Image (tube, rainbow, N blue to C red):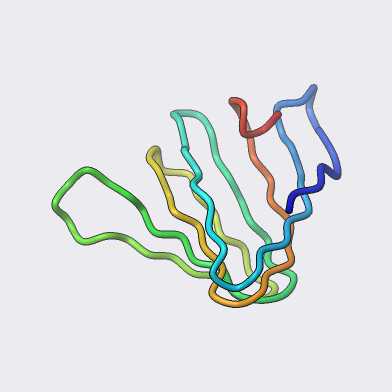
Length: 97
């Protein structure tokens, strides 16, 4: 569930309150010039980079009080390791609006 809290800088940055039950997932597509940040208030969330290369997948995780920053261009699968409550902020493109 997402709830828009604010839209800053003429709509180029959006801030949403998010809740994700354990096991829920979403795809984040980061275009050049875009970025997405999660600030976890409760629970733990992970993001796996879905690259087209044969390199091992990159996984980053964040738990309560820590940010998860997605800035490299590509597609990320973001999923909740446990029940998550947090903030999601996106800059640029349709993700920020």
